[in-house]
Structure formats: structure tokens, C-alpha cells
Length: 497
Image 1 (cartoon, one colour):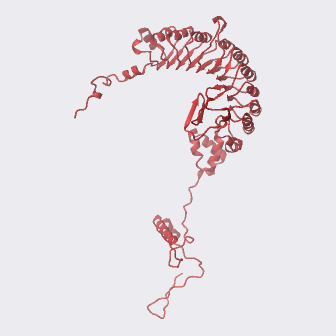
Image 2 (cartoon, one colour; image 1 turned 45 degrees about the vertical axis):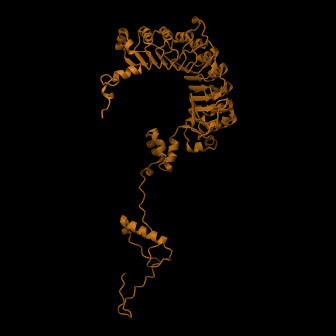
Image 3 (tube, helix red, strand yellow; image 1 turned 135 degrees about the horizontal axis):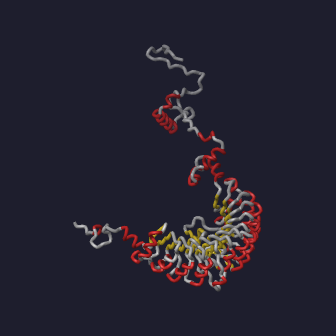
């Protein structure tokens, strides 16, 4: 609609056109103009001026905020909204595990789906479990770790203490009882209630790590989680092990009885016998800080016929326990870790017996100065194929020479054994006619210059040779011909002004 000017009494003036009554507000600018970015900024500045003005709006004033409506570009189309949850879960499950946490930040739907992809969780706050939020957030868990949630520790502390498999935050106060006092661990009744909830929510639980649980809590897990295959228990006593007798499908068990400076509980022959009679399908067993003797190991060997791997860490076994290994008819791997002694009183050699199925023997951070205990160990493991020494103290030439008893060794690995010399190594490895692999790392008394022709000939026929005994000799060979390290070398010439 257009307006034509009408003459007024004053011929030089024109009457302004009357405003249309059908419109209740001012006309807005054409929408096409708002597509131009430059015009958007101009209108935005005009809007700011009108908002800052204290005068009332007038027809000649800029558009008010109510009249000014910027066209908002429609959001980018979410192509994943076309997928069902089941299909999107399949797609997200193909991504690396490291990206799961980042993907959960995309939107609420992806956060919801992320919770259904997570199957392993380490709970740090007991309230997260007790309130039931854990099952709403992660409904498909098969692996749960409750240890840190059961220990009251300052989360904002910058002091972090690690002892074996346990890592906790502590404050600057230290008592004679250690880093963790008895009151710092939740009461067994509270822990048992949490285990009962876990059993009800996650009947398909495969792995559980708990601390301070009693017989009742473990029994509820055994009743509800029939598929439980791996169990790790901290600070549990003999009677608590009665609760896991119903876990007929347990294959991996790890018992931590005593950890110096943290907690102390007793697992003796009684507990080992209860464990052996209740869990007959064990494949791997690790005993850390546990007491016991010949009777406990014998019960495990007789009842757990499928046991293939036995690990003893910082054991407190009575003398004579080595002879009970002969009852482990299917044992293939024996690991001794952080043991102050092998066997304090192994007894006569003819009473030790042997375990002919053992193929691997691992000694890590053990004290090997007791020749009698080391000899008894090699007699029991006479048929071993792989022998590994790692950071063992007291492994001198006379102690290592006992290993010559084992005639079928195919692999020998020595790492961090500084007391062993080149002569002691040569006297043993040359006696092993089936040796195929040799690894010598960080054994400072084994010198390149002391390698004899016989030992060099052995090196040439081995299938695998890893020879880094002395870091100094390795450095010298790598810098040969560069002039570094010699007096007057080109890298050490004095700069002339």
C-alpha cells in the first residue's frame, strides 16, 4: 500500500501519512536483511543504545527489545538421533576405551549410553553405592572395586602412599598403628550391606575387590552372583572365607592378609583349608601376607586339582611348606615376590619331593642368601623350563650355581642382580644343554670384557639374546668413534674468544 501526499494550508508543507490502524506495532525490517552479518551487528548496536536510553520510546526511537527478534540459525542436525539406542551402542562400543569419557560429554543421551557401556568401575565414594545411584548410572557392571570406598581418607590430600597393590591418600599425621587405623575402615556390617546390594543389582558380576568383609557379606555375593569368577579380598580373616564356599565358579582368588603399615589380619592353615574345600575350581591363587604351613598348601594341592598358577607375596609360611608343592599335580607357574626367605626349614632333600609339571619359576625382589632354602626350591622345581630373577638380593655366584640342578632350562632372565659375576653366570649357563634364550639386564658385575670364547660361542647359537649387563659398557660402545669422553675430544674443546 502506498500513500500520496495531500496539500495542507501551508503549501510548502506536506501532511505525514497516517499510521495504519490494522498494525499494532511497527513494521520490522525484512527478514532477508537479517541474513546479512553486517546488518545484524548494526541492529545489535541499535538495540544496545535503546536499552541504555532512559527516555521513553517514541516512534522515531530505535526498535525496542520486544519488537526486535533476531532470526536464530537452526541448530545443526544431529544425525545420530535417527539411530536407535541399540544401534548407537554398537557404534560407540567400537571406539577405544580412552574415548568413552569424552563421548559422554557430548549430550545427555550419550551420557546415558556411556553408562551402559561401562563394565568395570572403581568406586571411590561409599555414598555413591549406598544411595543406589551407581546402578542408575552404570547398570551393566561386571567388575567392581570397593576398596577405596571403604577407607576413610582425605581425598584432597597431596600425600599418596602405595604399598603393593594398595594406594591411599593420607594426611600428615602418622601414628604408631600405621597409615590406616582401625576406625578408618568401614564397619563390617556396613560393608556387608553394600555387598548385598551389589549382589541384587549385578547378578552377572564377574570380578569383585573388597576389604573388611565378613562371612555374611561374602555369602550374599556367593548366592546372588553365580557367575563370579575372580575375587580379591583385603584384610579378611579365616572365618570370612567360609562365605565364599558357595562360589562354585571361582577361578582366580587373591587374598591379602597383612600389609605392613596399613592393616593386619590373619589367614592361616584354617582359612586355606576352608578355601580349598569350597573353591575346587581354582586356576590362579595369590597369597599376600598370609600365614600357613605344609598343611594349608597340601589342602590346596589336593582339593584344587585345576590350579595352574600359585603366587606367594611376602609370605609368612612356617618352615617345611615347600614339600607340599608336590601335591599340586597341575601347577605350571610358581611366583615368589617380595619374600624375605624362601623356606626357613625345608627339611631333608629326600622328603621334599618334586613338582614335575612346573614350567615357570619367577623370583621378584626376594632375599636369596639362604642357600638351604634356595636349594630346596630348585629341587622341587627340578623340571622347570623358564627361570626369571628380577631385582633379587643376595644372588651371588655360589647361590646361583645351585640352579644348575635344573637341567631342562630353556630360558634364563636376570635383571638387577648386581652380585652375580660373569664367571658365575658362565658356569651355570654352559651346563644347560637345552638353553635357547638368555636375558641379562642391569647386572653390573657382569662385564663385556670378561666374556670367554665358550660363552661367546653359546651366544651365537641362541635363539634370543638380550645382553645389556652394564650400562657403562653399553654407553661406551654406543659412543665409539664420536670422540665423546676422551680428553681433548671435539665436544670438549675450549671455546676461544
